[in-house]
Length: 438
View (tube, rainbow, N blue to C red):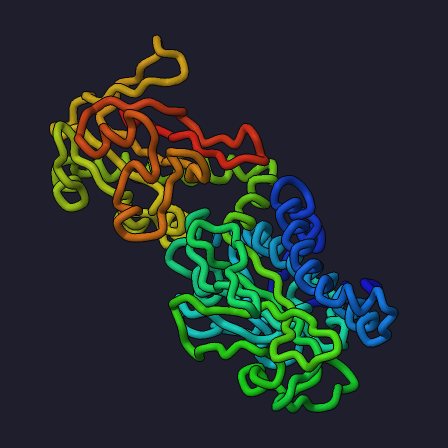
């Protein structure tokens, strides 16, 4: 299936994802999680046909085969989307990782030129298979796949922040109303794929064309004829999506098969890259250098504008890259990650802060520190949540031990690693990073 079609260049995307990237999510926990999701969907889609299959019902057999083909197409598209996200920087230098493409709005298999709605709004259309370097994927009934992307990760216009705590928008449910699990702190997906299946009563689909998907050149106009879920035209809030199930021997009222991606799955896959830890550490280093230069340019005045006096320290969230004086072409990635960083500085500019490293005998003395909490703790009694404004304002949701307490109370003593690392690529890198600014 890949011969010829898979090698076609995208019509509108200047820098498509590298072909090799779509294979990456098959490794590590992200691949395992993706396989488990598809396996769960197979059970949801096929078990209902089990009794009919046992009796040799030909219709049930045909539906089971079609569902299996649909799930295979969904799995292939899902892997390609994750591959696109974790290789985005290679095709779009200086823009960062984690972005997903806008949907195909014009029925040509490509992400459109320009924006897909305003910043922060979800977008829906057909799967941009050309942009993803895929063949013209079809479900088991010969229909093209559809795709929705959250405003928090879409590539145009880009969100103001994008990192391992970015929110999702899509809430998948079964037809019975049961919530389906999503690997994300807010239990919402950042992307959803749809295999629309056969037309339901009331859906009128044009005949297939010689090339490309059936339907018109407007995904928005065709939406109701292919998908069961009603999508708001412009939404920054949660959107429910329904995973349909086969109903052998009866007409179904919802038959879309869906697969989805949570933000944890994107960053679990990114962590598999051998260079990802160095990339994040490089951002911390760039931010630390810019913070030091800002303090050198007028210590007291800068802290008066950007810090809050707490105990013996002046503390705050890392300001925007523009406020740090970074050049325009270097601002993007810093701003995507700055919500993960906090600073603390001695009020008078002396080196009053003690930073303990792995060796208790090794203590650094600093006039200021830049702190990054790493990935959140996902399980256990100290599980961290960073979804609401109140949670994001709480140092304990980012830092552990004395770091959270001392940042909140202004005590000039911290402990942590000097550099961001991911020693186990299959587990979140949660260790606090403390950069000392002498």
